[in-house]
Length: 458
Image (tube, rainbow, N blue to C red; front, side, top):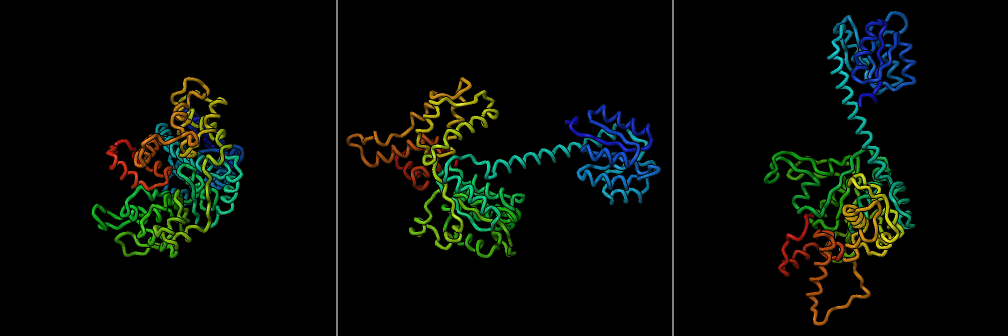
């Protein structure tokens, strides 16, 4: 990508100036030249230079250091390289202190110049790519870019905007696949903490001891396998946001530890004696009914009230069906280049199938369904036939009846296996759809002698 970067060569010696420009142009860069500091500054006002080669000694007008200072005012991101035929330690130190990144001595070796410029441009390319990625990430998670026509979702997005720059704890509730983490990221990236870390922790994916170390870190020797000190997610999120997903799954002990952190904004690493102070906004999410969990003594009421300062409830997709067509078309447009498929739209019949399906897995299931249809699609438009797998697994509660002589245990078994089939063996999603604990599904699979291999990693 060399041709996208411009270079300026400033030297009163025409031979030096033009020979260096010729070398750089051979390497594929765009190059402007100037015999004086004042003309160089005028050029920099209208052109964004990545690198400026500036001669230290230029008779009359501005010398090299003065020229560099003025160039930096117009192009603060430009790398300035001072050139001189009279190298001394003092002049090199002064040039570096004034802001020069490199200091080279005449006569120049063209190969060394090429290597120097290549190294600087490589860093510039990485910086630019990082900037583009950061902007794309911020755009992806800004509340303005969350797609919905639903009035309730618009209320939620309005609330996201209002609370984005607050420190208050947020509790996001909703079924699996409704987009709880997307809302959490929208809050973070729309607020004053956007430039700081957003750290996500899946509380339901780890055992209690591992989760404690994950959240708070540990010291060397704190437990078997702790070979060195490790920072926890709360420390990493300092200044930014920590997102605690599946908060309803944590043990009562960890609930107490988390409550202490929320109240005091300080904690100890596992096995540590040094108190760690943190400033991290906490956003928690759950697909469980925490109020019921509090009533059942499975969740601390004091922690619930600490988390539930700002409450956001995301409606399931079946309650905002007007979003299904625009989401489906959005997924088609986004997935087409990723999958390398020339699929651009959906037929009305296909949209009717999607609209009438119940979407127990919500937006995540819709995205997965669109992707699956695109993988097998032979045309440029998704049709009803591409979604036959949904029609085969769709439930029809009004037309369903219990076969004669069927026991309650058999009905339970069929419901669990059918849901696991729908979620492609994902026990976590199946548990959320059925409204039961994952441990219950594991117990039933063992009871029915169904191999655990049918389930996918969680």
